[in-house]
Image (cartoon, rainbow, N blue to C red; front, side, top):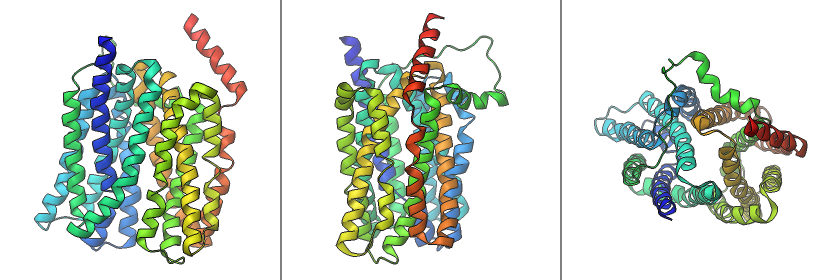
Length: 416
């Protein structure tokens, strides 16, 4: 009983840290782009560069951190990444006060924050696996998923109001403070994470070690299809998102507040889906929930190609986004738990880092590609193409034959 109370205490502080930092990030949604536009008067090319290159380069830089973090306690790593993000973000208002802020500095800050984000998220997964009993993993991941959607629902509208009242740099300061508070909450959590066993003698990091996460994913019959599916689905959804903004605020004439409402209100679906995920797994089983929810989340986006002006168009976007986000709210915690359960403790950070880095790089690449497509065909056609391709992604979800192979593989490993 003491062990369970201790695990609940540590997870509670982790949950607090995750919630505070996630809300800070959503509160500062698109802060760099707004600072570049409103403060530095940057052009579209510079803003696009900032939005695409920062996360992509950050994903590349995060790759060597995976093997390095693997053999270290995860809580100090999370605290360190929080403090790094706080420090680099505070450099923005400091430079702004000195009238020395540049787009180049924003790009460096964006890259650093992106690399630290990936490292933090990978360490969170490993820490959760260490401190949370296996039978409680889905509940824990469901709570983190609920927190993400709650912050996504509340953060951008409040951040937009703060920008209107106090200026865009304000949200960057708030984001930095959220990471400082997160580091404090993680410090209050105490220990609990497993001290990884280090090979003796300690091996030097080699270039081939950087690929360990991808090797494990691609050799796993269980994780490989989920990897391909999630990377493609997330990339296609995010690639069409800015095009929908262009379509709604431009030719369709929606006001910015209507656009914000169209994406804030459906986040309630993510909260509902995350709360339902555990009950659905208990009733129907993990595999079936993964397949059904994974299929449903691919079926909604094509509807965005038919959005029109006026109230009917706004309602259509809200309904489509609600269905999509609810499906994701169910799928994501089940998927996260499934991935953690099938990844050995000494490979969690490398696996999650490789997964996240690939996802961020794919989103950046597909966003750039869909921007070019929209320039040729128009945003509505590009959105339709993304939605049509999403309809094919359920083919990449694990099928029953692959699941049987995976079960036999795990049984063989257990006997060995």
